Length: 93
Image 1: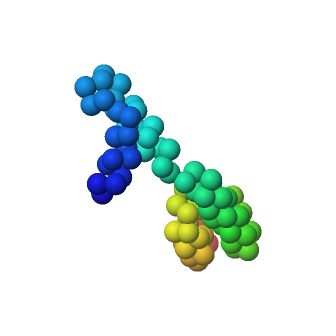
Image 2: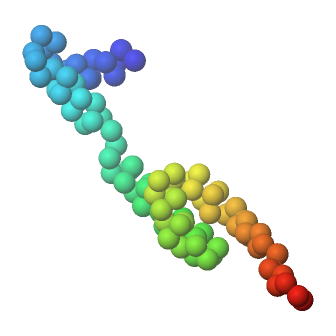
């Protein structure tokens, strides 16, 4: 934790009014953005494949984009069929 704090505070004067933004950008620099992007692409591709397999392509894409692998589980769940109301009876029949 001390190492992360020292990296975040590197080159930052705590009395500076813009210190928050400098710390924020220092922390954002530490995030592995390329890896996060490619993992997200992989999650979406697998979600699209699973959605296509289940007949719900766009639902698979959106759920994988929003929830990652948890979206795969949602897409693989069986679809509940709606209960249809009984047919109407006409008077005199």
